[in-house]
Structures are given as structure tokens and as C-alpha cells.
Amino acid sequence: MNIAVGGFFHESNTFNPIVTTEKDFVVFEKGAIYSQGGSYLLAKGIVDYFKDLQEYRLLPLNFARAVPNGEIALDYYLQLKARFFEILAAEDSIDAFVLALHGSMRVKKIGSAESDLLKSIREKYPTVPIICGLDMHATITKTMLENAQGLTGFKTAPHLDAWETGRQAARMADIILREKAELHMAAVQIPALIAGEKAETDLSPMRELMELTVALEAEPDVCAASIFLGFPWADSAENGVNCVVVCQSNLKKAEAYAQHLADAFKAKLDKFSFSGLALQPREAILQALQDTCRPVFISDSGDNPTAGSTGDNTSLIHLLNTLPEMAKSSKRILMAGIFDPQACEFCKGHLGEDITLQVGGVFDQTYCKPETLNGRSLRLVEGFGPFRADLILFASTHFELIITSKHIGFTSVEMFKALQIDYLNLDIIVVKLGYLTEDFKAISAKHYLASARAAPMKCCAGSTIAIKKVYCACKC
Image 1 (spheres, helix red, strand yellow):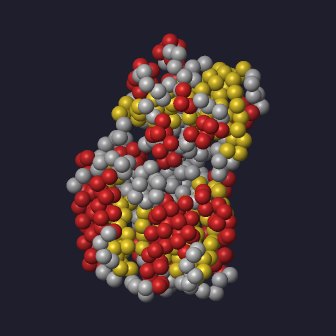
Image 2 (spheres, helix red, strand yellow; image 1 turned 90 degrees about the vertical axis):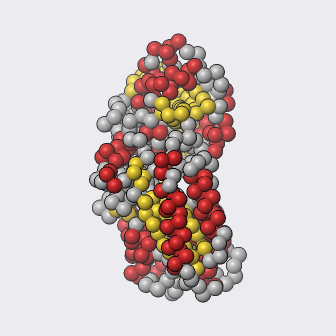
Image 3 (cartoon, helix red, strand yellow; image 1 turned 120 degrees about the vertical axis):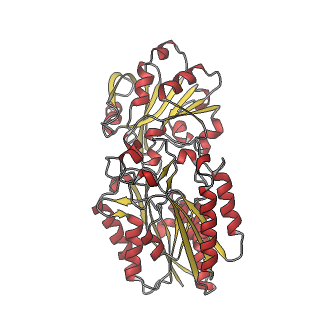
């Protein structure tokens, strides 16, 4: 039996003016998944499930992944999609599709990429089962529900179970093909949007809600139980929380359990809150300057690239550069970081020199402006990580700043190690992130959330979603 595996993974922020194009993606095809799967764990989980089962033949298609950003350019998405079907066309028959998708990938002039892709697959392969593994922040559309036999999503935030989710998606296809079973899927939408910073799964109320999904999956005939939060930073009519349950040969059970999950979620709507102390940016910096523990983390969550922001808002950089209290402090401070290709290139040409640098405010011209810094470029790292970004460590008067040539996330100490930063002995680390990743949780002595007003933080204020019918926990 032939299993087609492929996937496009991107979280698209419709309030971000950047258009995401080919240069932002890591793309590979066919057998490359066996060597590059570590950069796409959702797809790797699918492949690992099937690779040792002799009755199946895997047909890897194309895979594309990028850091969350603005919407995808139409021509580039159509190029990815055309290549997907071009590789498929070389095969005589397909018995199932198992896809590693995000669920909130949006394309200029089209909207939901997942809806478009699944509809196109169904038109060409009207009887072939389609199973999808998705991100927890997927936006579940009517088209996705109509064209897939099963959807399952991550159960952890930060996302630590991508590989396991891939295996669960693969297992559903296995049930259909080997056990000749019929799957039934039910979904209940809740008119709510919950910011990721309020939905960490090791804290209440998401911890208990995810424990409920696991308990439901232990029930006979239940193949998957998922809570998809939607994506607050995308203006979409179908956006919202969805509780989705897939059962084997039992539609009524799927419907009852999806409603049970939805009722449990609605009962906890007023319990969602920030995991850390949320302060205005100025207050967060002043408080961190008074703390005696280290390192103290400050999340610039309003300009979080891993939620699709521009990554070049200078609000906190301006405070670090101009607050009078900074001149009186001997604290060692790192700002991680800023996305500015031109500033990065300028620094590369003046390594070790004293320079005046204008940085940031290139893409987000609504809520900030470029900041002028005096200092020196200390170190350069070229081709960092899967997206091959150049990194500059720039020492200004009061703090050090990481400048990146590409729109990437600030999620790991690997970036600090590459730049030879003694991060454990820093007093304050300001990071463009929402909730802390596992790397940062492990070293953080204290954490403040400071939401600078950046371009993607318009949320409901700039949305066409009728706020009267939507409970928004974003506090935008």
C-alpha cells in the first residue's frame, strides 16, 4: 500500500506587512526527509511510523517550513503546490495521504493554504483517505473538516510532541488501511481566541484540558482528541477554538466527546491568564534592574517572531538605550534580538570598529522607528541554524544586541553559544518571545512578560471578526 507523505508548515500573521517568500523557507523533497527530518519533526514522526512496516511503501513528496511571518506570496505557494502534485503524478496509485501541516498557513488572495491543498487533493483523489497532523494553533476550517478523515494536533505548548503527533496521524491511516475501519470526525467550535502566552500546557487551565484529551484517547474507538486554539494574529472569519475528536466506526461518540471537550473548555474561559508577571515594558526593565537573581528574562511578546511578528520593533531597545536608570546600572544585559538585514550587513563590514548604527523599524513603521546606537560589532556567525542566518553580536553603551540577517526565532541557547555569549552570567536577557521555551525555562531565575505594542498586536482591534461574539483573552 502506498502512503503519500508531505507537508507545508507555516503560521501566518495577517497583520505583519512582510510577505513570506521562497527565501524564508527550508525546502526538501522525496528521500531527503530521511536525513533532514530533524528539522521537521511532525513529518519525521509520520515517516518513522511507517518505515518498518513491510506492507507499506512510503512516497515522500515535498516539504517546506518557515518561521512564522506574514502571509505567503501567492506565486510561491502555487509553486510548492504544483511540485506536490508533480511528484504525485509519477505514482500509479495512492492508498492514503498523511500530511504534516500547520493549520494556520495563509496565502495572499487565497486564505487558508490547508483548505486549498486538501480541497485540491480531494478533487484529484476523491476516495483516498487524508489524515493530517497539525499544530495546536491551527485554524480549523469547514473545508478541512469536509475533506479530511482525521485531524490531530500537538498537546504541548511549548511544542514538544511534534514527532508523537506525526505518529498519531500515521496510526489513523494505518487503522483505515490495515483494519479496514471507517473513521468519523466531529468538531465543535468555540467563539474564543486565546493568546499563546495564556495557554501553556504545564499550567492551568490548559494542563487539565489536555489531560482530558489524553483521557478521551484512552477510551475504546477514540483515535484522536485535540484542542486547536486557532491563531489570534490572523484575521480570519473561521478563526477560533475548535475541539475535534476522531473515532473509529462511531460518529455519535465522536460528536459527544467533541461537545464534552468544548463544554470543559468554555467552563474555564475566565481562568486563562499569563504564566508570568505581565508588566509594561518600562516597568519590566526597571523591576529587572532591581532584581538580585540572574538571569532575569523579559519577554518582548508584542514582537514575537515565532508568532509571526516583524521581529524589528525597537520599543524595548529604545528603553534600554535611553532610560536614565540604565546609565546608573552595572547589569550585564542582552537583547535577543532584532531582525535587520541591512544593519547586519553594515556590521559585517565594520567588525571590531566603533560605529554609529541605525537598527530596526524597517518593517514595523507603525509602532516604532529606527534606533540609533553607538558601539562595536564584537562577533559574526554566518549560516546559523536551518535557515542559514547571519548573526552579529553588537555591544552598545548599556547592553549587547543580537542582529539577524533573516527572520528567525529567538528560542534557544544554541544562538548564544554560537556567539560565545556567557549567558549564565548575564543579569538580564530580553528576548523577542512569548512564553519561554524549555531552553530558557531551564536557566531563568525570574520571568517578566512585557508586551511592546508592535504591528501584529492589533488583534481584535484591527480584525473584522465581530468582537461581540468572540471572547478574546489576548488583552490587546
